[in-house]
Amino acid sequence: MAFHLSAIFFNRIKAIALFIAFIFFTNLHAQLTDTSSLRSDAPKVFINCEDCDIQYFTNEITYLNFVRDRHLADVVVLIRSINTGSGGTEYTFDFCGENYYKGCIAAEKFNSLPNMSNAEIREGMKQALTKGILIYLLKSPLAGKIEYSVKGLEERGTADNVKDKWNLWLFNINGSINGNGQEYSKALFFNSNFSANRTSEKNRFETGFFQFGNYQKYNIDDTTTIVSSANSFGAYSFDAISVGKKLAVGYFSTYFSSTVQNLVNSTSFYPAVEYNVFPYEEATRRQLRFNYRIGGRYVDFYDQTYLNKYNDWYFLHSLVISYRQVEKWGNLSCDIGTFQYFSKEKFYRVNITPDISWNIASGLNLSLGGNFSVVNDQYYLKKDEVSSEAILLGQTQLKSNFSYNFYVGISFSFGSIYNNVVNVRFNMNDNNW
Image (cartoon, rainbow, N blue to C red; front, side, top):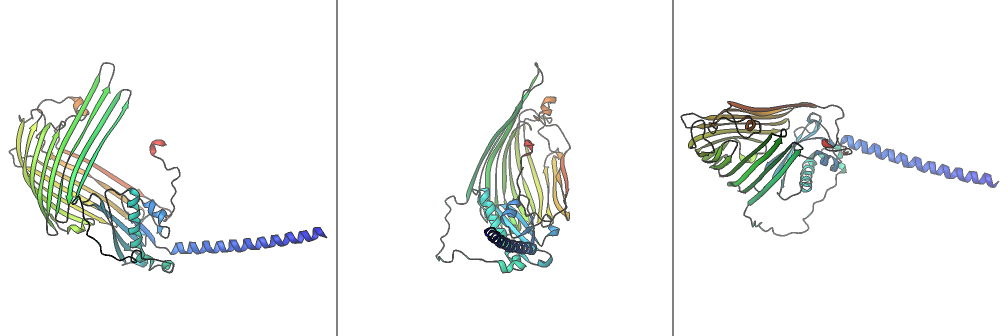
């Protein structure tokens, strides 16, 4: 009898446990189903940004569906950036609705300071992103799940004007040394630069210097050693004064010395004027600038040139046309510049630098660009014959009628449209593979 009662007791306990487990898993399934439903109702967002930490946004903003292609998105977020006078960066967020949200647009901005850490910049960008996306969430099925609060209004007071002890001046000092070597060779590269600028709405002034060089040594065999060194140094100054929303006037002044280009010193001064077809406040989105300079340059050479000169004066003018456009379909830029010398040799140079990044179709991206120069201003070339070692080691330049570089890249991706999951396991530098 005792055994029978014990069996009944344990059967009842088992039944209760199974019932509790059933209720728990049923509730869990309902919660998961509800979460899955909410996830499918969330707007699909595509972020178009070249230098953003997209994984950070994906990991931190869990109530959005981030997709890999703009053609799959309900909301396209275009993030543009431009340097500010303080040495920081202004990030502009443009939101454009697609599909159900067609015609719904929004904009936000975030300004980083030069002393901000990467973590602070990412957090500031995340806050701008979440503010801008709010208008779309209010139109989505998630609207009923939104709770918000406004902080800071509990304390009222008058804001004091900010006093800047530096009077908008910003200074930067940089330098680096790096080297590499093997049993038969060694190389050392070094550079440094300094800049000081003051930027306001009406005026932009900057001055600074830069220096870079290298030392290389190669032991070809027991009796042959090749040693190479090159050094360049420069300083510059410019001032741009705003005249209305589209015009600026000012000057450029430069000093340059280079062993590779046979220049002991090259000193220049150019008054300048610039006209921007679009207002300067639209610079993060689009620019079409025409910059014209005219002035003179005095040059001293290390070695006699092929024109039998040790120094000379050169008068020249320059026109540079710069176009920039950043849209949700991609980025487009092109610079066309020319220098023309008022001399009997009629020296000149023409540079063309196009660059495009284009999201052609869903999953398909094309990037291409480069630089092409028509060269006819190498007045600094040495008269004496140049050794093969000096050419191969980059110690001097030879006459060339042109120079160019280019790149073409294409990528195609397909599969799952979502990229909400962040997983950095086995994320190593290629050198460690």
